[in-house]
Image (cartoon, rainbow, N blue to C red; front, side):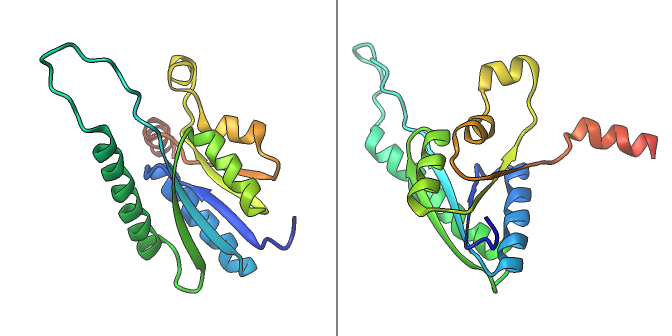
Length: 160
């Protein structure tokens, strides 16, 4: 595993995933690794509509989501990744966990750095966990980054 030559860091543009980008960037800087930032756009399910209802142009909407993601990734690299780090971005269409693992395999990355939102209970059951699935299925090491929830931050401040 060491030295790290390629680091894959998926992002959903949330605060925890920005923290994962920060950690992945530090690793990339330390090991002079290539950093690959990806965002997976989930396909929009086609739902039958009743006659007379408004129809959305799904291919056009899907394309807009991909363009938005490309722009967001470009901005993240400019704002969060040190200039000395060799970074590239990819936007992929598909199931997030499966596409992250596939990309890691295709690129032969040394480690995946992924944020976890720390959901538990019914939220985890309803929303699932991309990070958990990636950890279970990936063929390379996975570093999961978790930042404390706002409630835990406030509780820590009260105790401190």
